[in-house]
Structures are given as C-alpha cells and as structure tokens.
Length: 398
Image 1 (cartoon, rainbow, N blue to C red):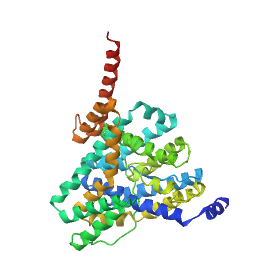
Image 2 (image 1 turned 60 degrees about the vertical axis):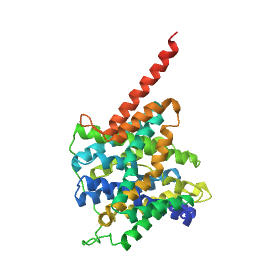
Image 3 (image 1 turned 180 degrees about the vertical axis):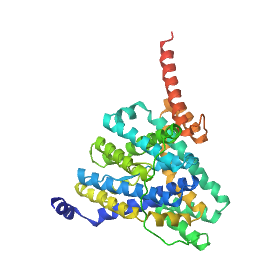
Image 4 (image 1 turned 90 degrees about the vertical axis):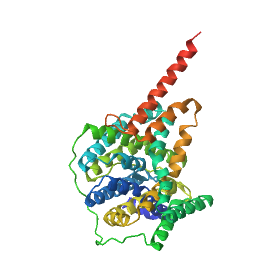
C-alpha cells in the first residue's frame, strides 16, 4: 500500500507519455528486425507470435520491477543488434536450436553478472573492435535501403526524405514519422495487403531446446557479445549521464534471469535499452529526477499490454510491403551504424584492427560453419594483439 501511495503521488502525465513513446518507438523500429529474422528463417506464425510476446512481456515486467526497486527509469528492451545479427545468421536453424543458443547467451551474461566480470570484460575488449563489429553487423541493413529503391522508388525515397527532414528539424522521433509516412504512401499506392485472418491474443509457447554446439557458437556467443557491448554498456551509460547511479550488477543479473525465463518462449535476449532509454531518463519525462522512475514503470506496463497483441502485430507486419520493412529497418539503424563507425575509427592506433573487424563482419563470410560476427571479433582481437606486440618489439630494438 505504501508503494502504491508513493507511485500515485509521483505520477505525472509527462512521465507516462515518455514511457508510451519509448514503447511505440521500439515497436515501430527494432521490432521490425524480429519479424524480418523470423520471416527469413521461415518460422511458423505461432512461433513468431510467441517470440514477440516473450520479448515484450519480458522487457515489460523486468523494467517495471527494476524501476520500482531502484526508483529510477530502468528501461528494458530486447536486443536490437541481436535481432539484426539473427537476420543474417538465423536462417538454417530450427526454433529449438535457436532456443538453445538463446539460453546459452543468457547463461554467459548471467556468469558475467555473478562474477562481476562485466567491467573487466569491457576493459579487455577494445571499444573500437566492439563498435566495428556492431557497425559491420548493421552495415547490410543500411545498404539494403538503397537497393530497395529499385523495386519501390516512391515508397523508399519518400521515407528517406521524411527521415532527413525530421532529422534536420531536430525531431527525436524521426523514425516514428518515417513509419507513418511509409504507411501513408504504401496505402495510397495500394501496396498494403490486408490480412484475411481475424486478430487474436498472442499466447506464449514452450519450445524444447535442442542443443547444438554449432548453434551455440554461431548464435549464442555473438548474441551475448553484442548484447553486452551494444546494449548493456550504452544502456547503463545513458542512465549514468542522466545522473542515475543505479548499480550495474543487479541490472545485468536481472536481465539475464529474464532472458533465461523468456528464452523457451522465443525471446532472443532481454537487456537494458540504449536508444529509448534517453526518452525516459531526461528532463522531458519530468523535471525532478526522483519522479522519472514513473516513466520506467509506465514503459513496463505498456510493454506488457503490447505483448498480448503480438499476434496482431505479426499479421499486420506480414501484410506490409517488404520494401517498407527493409527501409524502416535501415533508417532505424542509421544512427547506430554512424555511432559504431565513429567509435571504431576514432582511435588512430586502433584503426587497422577496427577496419579488419568491420570488413570481416560486413562481408557475411562463413568458415567452419561459424558466421562473420564471430570471425570479425577473432580477426580484430588477433590484429590488435599483433599490433600491440609489434609496438613493444619495435621499442626494444636498438
């Protein structure tokens, strides 16, 4: 009762609105990657609906509980770079094999959280290599935007134009405007095929994992790595920048536990949000930082409500033109691609290892059954180690 009285006192519509906008932005951008990955992997519709239910419900309940516990806007979402990774590497794996890889990734993150190795891991892996890998993963989505101009020039170019205008005007919700503009153009040109089935509530499925070392190494390890470097680090950094000193260990462990619980229903990873967190942690949510946790609570509640409409969302996205989905994916990731490239090549001494990491990852190569993201990290770390050792040897030579 005391908690409810405090929340009623701290409740503000600006915080509630911030939470709602964070959910809308997530569903209009990063969620598209999930549908695209599932479509390319030919997963059945019930599995896709369960996947969406799991990531939305898991994000909602985790963010709600952590926000209340720490009285801070702890915004949780599914792994966007992880979903982007799955678009390229998920085809060829069954849902059961994917679930096993998701569980392995969650266990890796849980161990990192329990041992306190999170900060150590981040210090050991050069930021330039992690950023280059992320940029390499996302690079394909940026180029696909312009490839789509061939088949739907009016739709794609209008969406790009809206994005540029909104960014020029300083809008923080440029992707949301792109989504709306794309829908209007697609509807006006008759490119939307209305679903024939009736909408129904999404229900979770329990999918039995089938363990495969191939899947664990090719999916699980890269998923854990991109989540730690692409979500946990920036997500917690956003909170720190807004003045919230919430301890990172319980956040890591809480999200790892949520990922373990939601993985059997299809969730590929639950983790701190990096982009939408800024909407709920800044002054727009509330002038008083002590009352901004309501934005995190509201965000969690809206995610939970959205989870049960996952089946309808799946059908709606299936009715939209492929070019709309591809363009929205790419535009939503423009900022992440730019940030990754900027970080990757900002340190002149790390540019060669970063470039190798980026090129290997962006190439889409496979070797011994392992994908480009894995080999990108391996190549970058080896190049970094060689560069460091050569520098040491050169200083020792007479």
